[in-house]
Length: 431
Image 1 (cartoon, one colour):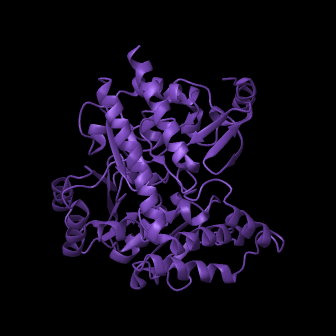
Image 2 (image 1 turned 135 degrees about the vertical axis):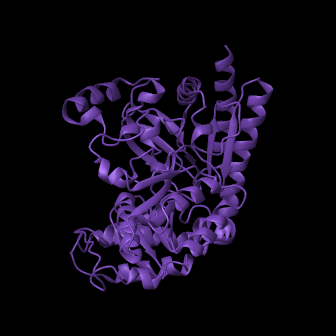
Image 3 (image 1 turned 135 degrees about the horizontal axis):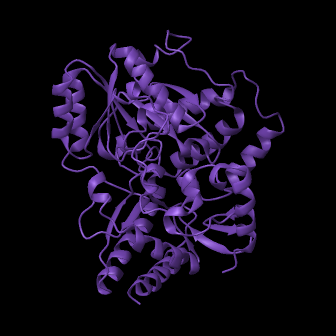
């Protein structure tokens, strides 16, 4: 596989951009490789600047549930572009978008559009603090909620990939207000609450962790969080930036039957454009300016391009909800089951965590159910596996601690070719 153009671009990029990339995991450092620079994409395929073609499972890290360059989304965006890109004023599409989000996710009674998942989570905890009059928050080890100061304490995603447990530049005073519990360990949550009685404003959680690899909630973990928050008058925030509209039309809240007080959204609701949102109970959201005193604003919030792409995507998901989610689940489960069978037959220890259209192959001897168990994974073996898959035409997330995402554009042929590439790659690990 040729990478000459990508290599030249990366060398040039490092002279102009920190590390040569605009988001750390793209540098391919954890897989001991050079990043690919992408030229174009369509459906389930992506092409780099050297002309290499891949079946890909990054899907822009989750937003492209309909695949790359979906014709309906592209057409809608082209039509709205004729009228301008941004006005800094309200538009009809914002109202339609909010209405559709509420229809699909009823717990979001009021919603505020922002420009990224980080902005959404940052705004949500500020709102929770204002609503409760408390300062401290509880998050979970390995869960990633963006790069705001309050969240960069034992964070997941690129922080785990690069082995950064917390970030320089975050003041101790701010970090001290963030308490870390163990994912899937309800006793660790209760212990923190007991030690900080009456001081916890909110608990924020990825209902399915996607940033230490895919880690599923177990033993009614989410329902027990809901019960604790009700009892202690703590705001429960579901970070559904990844799971929102991916696991089900109503996200993880529909999938598991547990409603949050506040929900943060992103990725899919932008249809491939930068977007985020936070919303929830009316009595809480009415505190947001201009209705209330909690200030938050954004020049490009709710811009017509992102809203049109997101609305078109959600509309398709809603209209096809009875079949699309079952098809996605079937494709992902087919991959997961075949991956596990092939690895077992070849004597390679893996754990395959899968839910809906998300999955992660952990090179791990043990069940992966929290941050600590995820970190037991063999990252060197994953790096060899990743590069072998790439050589065999399959582009995976370049980190052991990220999720593979499927789209409705992935065909049965894609699934078959991916399984064959997996078998070759697993055998290469034994060689």
